[in-house]
Length: 300
Image 1 (cartoon, rainbow, N blue to C red):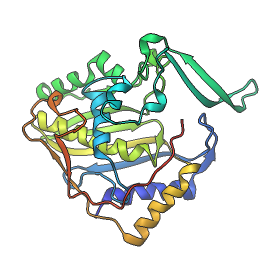
Image 2 (cartoon, rainbow, N blue to C red):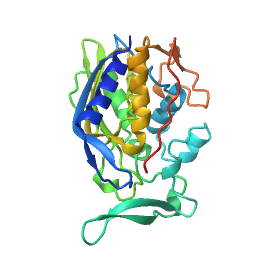
Image 3 (cartoon, rainbow, N blue to C red):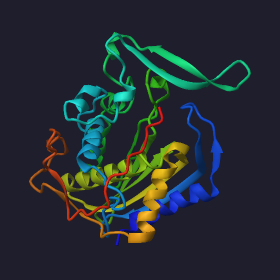
Image 4 (cartoon, rainbow, N blue to C red):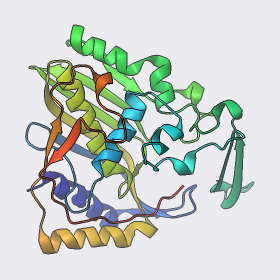
């Protein structure tokens, strides 16, 4: 049985039953609750949803794009047939084009064409966000050094929210920080998410950070421990409700399936050696059974 499916769908039900409908910059209203928290023990279960298909290759490659390749170049993902950042790619002239709901002179949200000039040096990137920040501050390298050499350290964290670089980021980081500790030979982390698209983003994000923890544990001689996940503004967009109701019906009518196991290539001893090609050959899900894909629209 998959505890993650139960916990995840419990959040979905809570949002639909207790949430507040609000306007936002995307122009598509969302139903939100102000906060939520999950706790996972990776020694008991690896969190991958079974009530809908999770595409592990794409999820892992996006995580490696940020923390291993430390890139903000969308073409890195596109060359591996990962398209999840296409809508936020700055064009070849250094301009990002979109339509968003922005406040007018009276504070009312109105649809506005956005043409933001980042400069040609940021062409085909998402600006100074995610992998750009990780590379600039060498966050992954510093974390691995502490895990290996100072596992007692209480200052092991990575924060992607850097005020100096927000204006030149297309989309400031949603999952914006992680804190790490080693206790009794186990690696644990606490992840903070400022804004959570529950149908689209959350399943990807949770699985990504669980893989990241297991990778870091392997290369640092530790065992996977726990993940705590805190969310501010957990929401479902109104055009995603039907898909979530379908997923809830699947659970109610069919139950859930047994959670799969994560396999990492045991030969990999350096985080930067995990395969980040299109094959993503060093990561597999063993016995992954799911109930099929559910498509959800992206709100930009």
